[in-house]
Image (tube, rainbow, N blue to C red; front, side, top):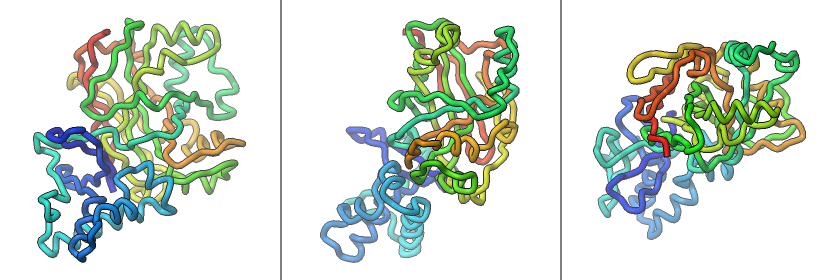
Length: 334
């Protein structure tokens, strides 16, 4: 399944709701309202309350309160298909249970409504080598010994088609093409064979970076902080792990700026697998459902490596095979 959040732009407040994007790429099914519609058909007085208990319209709640989140959401989709066979496509008050993404009143949002903890690794050797080469330094031996990561804030995440913030303190902004996972189960001191079981799904991450301030921060051997902590992008959907047979996929990844390809690589080029990253992060520390883990930038996956820089107004299109296109425009400097 392709899990998303959508908003209806003609509604106030514009509250994101959990959706399932169908294979046509145009239809969004509201799983919660599908369950409510079925309760209504069965004659219950409180269909919405029952649906909110059985299948909330919050991915974060589903990940944290249900033992098998994928099966829980699949039940909502199965209910939608059943109602379609009966010719029912909306509730008695006229609320539809599916929407056209091509409608002017429907847009995709950040695919998860809340992130527990955000960890971003540094796992692609080609990207790492280029960064140290620009600093005139060799790659530290420790990098090959264990996957390393930083923790970032979670409140600055945006979704597809939203404008990327250009921070007031930076003159040099950069994109980073990454694959990320969303965890669907808690775990601590995990073994390699357990790690993949904790992945709910895969999505695209743009770990936007203010390179000039990041360079200063890293020169004192601490950070990054303000070089990263202002805006990150997820989306457009989360593809559930069962679509990849619960194995880690090797996916083609590209980045295009204003329609011209700048970056191309594969997620499988990483020095460390997601299983190894999850094992490392879980040592004496709880990982929780709803956490997001990025793999780090794929080789050639940022302007720093290419000596090419994005500008205000540029359109960034990050593509990952079997997931889709994450498209955003760069905002003006504050």
